[in-house]
Length: 298
Image 1 (cartoon, rainbow, N blue to C red):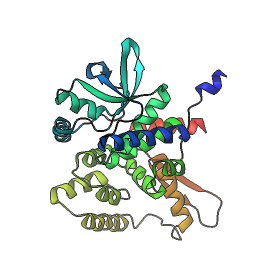
Image 2: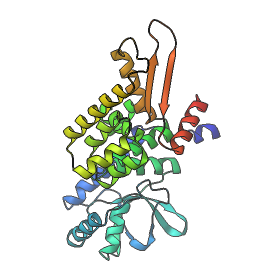
Image 3: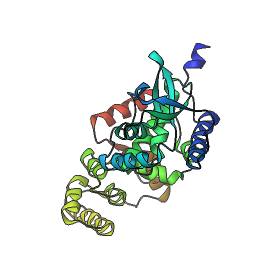
Image 4: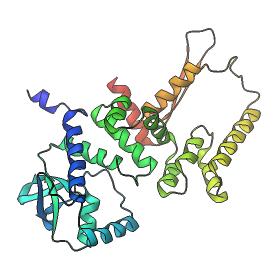
């Protein structure tokens, strides 16, 4: 029985119902109705989730939300769970809580739920993924965390979150980029379109700096990456080249593996043979640790 209780709960009816419940409560509040199960709690009795996956709260966005809360109040209740000392830990809605404090509210609407640590983390990640202002790297990291922590597949996430599998796969491929390029994307210096074009580049960090300095468009970035590839091909003309180009199945397998691992994967199959090599490129020691853990688990 203990083993069963310790097994991580997958994305299923319970979580889907919970997220639907939150949406319904928010709609009721916006319409001026009382939310089912909603409770007003003194703001000082709420505490932040120390494992909250979202670490960045843009001050400009918080200021906008604070002004809105001063005028209209908190329209959508927070999800909380009881903790020691008659307090409540925030599961979803920390940004609203921060803005409510800035607006000097004394009470805030909440939905109290009995959730274990696994469910708290899962709800917090998904609530963040559903935010419209999340950048591509934060969203991709959320998908990675759901897959690593709870064993979810891309198909399962796509179904539960109402996303296409290709959307999730394409975002997760961005995690194969070097950390400095990811940081440019987080800061808004590069768009997701720029970053996608850089995935196949030989030197994405250098190209990223060129793109930012020149204010290049996504199309210009794609042209730059192609130019780099041609130059690299000419420079390596003396190296033995594959006798045939990779077939569509091999390319698709590379793409699926890259998306699943969040790292760049290259498959080089020797023509007319059963052998070849698979190269996984990691961008940091953390990614290497993740790869080692996945291989050990297998």
